[in-house]
Amino acid sequence: MDKRILIAEDDPISRQLVVTRLTRWGYETLQAVDGAQAWELLQQPGAPRLAVLDWMMPEFSGVDLCRKVRSEKQQVYTYLLLLTAKDRKEDLIDGLEAGADDYLIKPVNALELKARLCVGERILTWQDQLMAARESLRFQATHDALSGIWNRGAILGQLEAEYARLQREPGFLGVIMIDLDHFKAINDTHGHEGGDIVLKTVAKRMLLEMRPYDRLGRYGGEEFLVFAPGCGLEQTVAVAERLLQALRVSEMALPTGSLRVTASMGVSAYAGEIGVSVEGLLRGADAALYRAKKRGRDRVERSCFEETRGRPASPNAALT
Image (cartoon, rainbow, N blue to C red; front, side):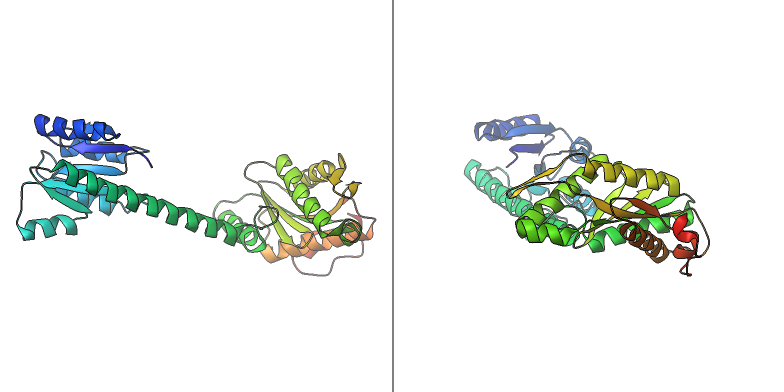
């Protein structure tokens, strides 16, 4: 747990008294002499998540600060403790409704202050655990459990988003469909454990060859999908050839032996043509992948314009 804490108090004697106690309890303190300075400190990256605020301060009161902090709707929670000489129930309710988590009436009892801060730390710890659990669930919902790359739904969603962006800002978009050659034979020979190692290794090798803004996802089984923003057809073919070479370069070590893995790849691309949709790009890449497999595998084939438009290819299309 982060042991930093912000103390906002305009009275120097009261502020130093609180700081001395907190330092003795192991806290690292940041000090603010008024509400404006406290707000500035709370806005900085990595700001303390515990704050002790005096109610009455120049610039912003402690209640004003509570309202401003809560209005930000920050994902990371800040625990706010008000110090006040006010003891009317109406005033204390106003402070809590403004966003304070708790309050202490001056003069502050040291043991009571320590107890309230322990409660604050416990609440922040619970929030951290909830955030970690939510992030884990988000990752599981968007990533393939085996390889750690994007799953089918996520990679298709990102492809749709990139295509939508190109409707506003014209550009290029390349798509590569990838199928590992003879994967069933790999499973039959080396077992499903060996097949899993192959899938993870393939994903890792391809990621190393891709630009930071290219995307790789597992499309299903032994199939992968790559899309490359800014790439026309020839550039996307070059990307696919690079990925193919990354798989060929060396054998993969498995518990039952080693083997060289190859893949068949089909490429399509979008350059603003009318009538070409995301479905058309996938259809064109899939048709090219089918040709790569028919022509002996371990190769890259490119789609023709008719395939991405959903029309039957001409007799010579397979030769382009």
